[in-house]
Amino acid sequence: FGEAFSKAQLGAGEGIPDGGLAFLSVRDADKQQIKTVARELHDLGFSLCATHGTAAAIREAGLECRGVNKVREGQPHVVDMLKNDEIDLIVNTTEGKKAVADSFSIRRTALQHKVFYTTTMAGADATIRALKVGTLEQVNCLQELHKGATDG
Image (cartoon, rainbow, N blue to C red; front, side, top):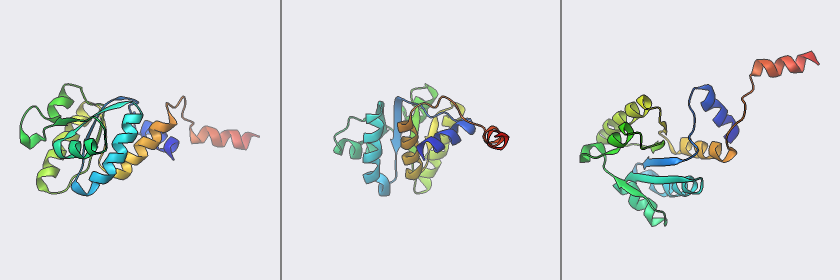
């Protein structure tokens, strides 16, 4: 699955970074699960930063995590970090009108700066699985594979 997800991302023109700074901000319902995601990302070589509530949950798991302001909490905030090309990967789940509004500016800026992001915990898990596969040397075109199977 990890390899397939990685190939799908490459096919969509998205590269999953293999290190750097990961920004994590999740709704309360995802706080337990983000601890596992944070540990996996840390073990894969990422540094961690998160909104203050998410950062506290990550620290509870014994990991270092820099706290970052939400957009509505004032500058400097996560969008500033994106504009400064400080963030390499984003995991952001939302709930509520204010969080969704903040999330829109994060997603828009991430797209403008070509920062990989996911908005679900399932997407975070898939991303980790892809990272564990490692860098793909080549992606095979299905038409070429089919041609090889029918030529023989």
